[in-house]
Image (cartoon, rainbow, N blue to C red):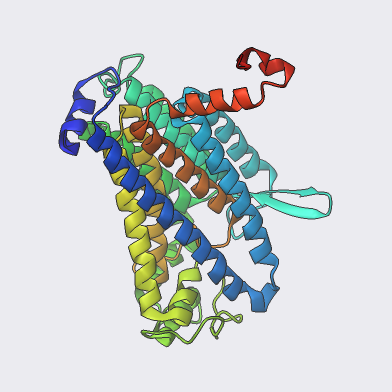
Length: 414
């Protein structure tokens, strides 16, 4: 059965379908290997470039923090893989509620940084930690929309049905509104695109896009009339050289970094612009340092890795053994890939400057942990296609290993 037939089956049947043909399992194994390999390469490359970018400014501090978060994200991804996307999706409404509450608390109770209230800051012992709830809110929206649409494929387009479009719009819209409350316009746009893209993949009628289009128009009017800071960001990227000493300073130095690197780059650790010339070099503009130190060849390698990541995640999605798996993998892929596209467009001057980190590469522990958690969920979709019920067998094997404990004594083998 080709992937087009599988998509048509998903769109025309209410009950989940299980594919048992060996060809689907073989293909999913290949896609999963490519997907995991590209995620590992991007993560390791990101840690390496972060060390180079930040060492001269802050020593190994940022690298050490990112390494810890990489460990946290790897554990989270492994947990998602073992638990499985089906079990995670059962509590999709709970994830939405938790995300909304955290976003509201962050927006109302924590001081803004650079005009946006994105971070919860707290201290554990002598360690100051920051957490960005919107990163995990993206995962919650992806799972919620995928679960709702897969369960209500025939009715989610209807306006007056109790399983129609209103519940999914309210759930996703609440989280998007919570992100917007924190004045994080970039993440608001990203999550909106992810939610709408997933719903379109599930068969959303185009006329339902009228309301989101009006909402987006109102945001644009608000920015134009009442938010001159963000308006200047929107307009400055079209004339970076003219405004290189004002709003276009960051973008101009980013372009200078790419130009300085040429084809082969100036050498690892050899960047000049990262030394106080390029703000946020270790976060949103880390790709500019990649271009300066390692040159065009390395940048093309990063683009190839992102492309392979997107392609393999997409193939895992369309090859999935269930509609829920298809939509879950597609939503998570869309969230990471669109974020990468936005970051690349920003650092190259193709889009307005916006605080959007490069997935797996930029400094930002919460973002890296969320991306690695998403990787685990997508791999669970592939594993479910390769071997349906794999995680149930994993749990059973784990319980048998722990059968020496009283609570697992029923699993002891005679």
